Image (cartoon, rainbow, N blue to C red; front, side, top):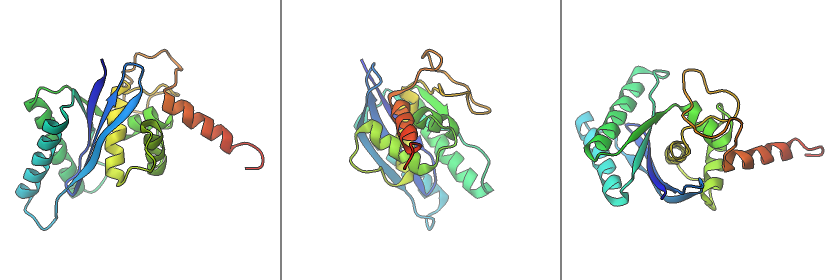
Length: 199
């Protein structure tokens, strides 16, 4: 039996959400993705309510069996961090309310699990997410793509099998050391092709 994961990229203005089904053989299938938006013109209480309602709707509509939330770091200005942390808290509350197991993953952990490179750029993450899910176009906006990447990372075990885990994070993968996910194999082939003479 597979896993249905709801990925949440927390944010106060744009809260990305993405739902994927992942089979035991690690094949991932797109279910839904989008963004919960709130206007800065609204009071903080109203904005948080809208995010909570959007998360609730996603849970009731798609019935995830797990939730993945990006771990918040204080690497930006205080107001941005506060909004992100508040949205993250709503995601954790929603998961607890519905009895959904959660996992929190750092951005570098997600990038490494999906692309094989912990410092991958957003375009690289979007490209690999589209490839893994068989999407004809890159998922937009970036917040939604990040949510899908979170869901994929979590379903694959939150692993960082290429090289060592990013600083401050742990790999929870049960895969043999050195094993590559299908996405990482595809990315590796693309990287090798880009280095061929004449390209």
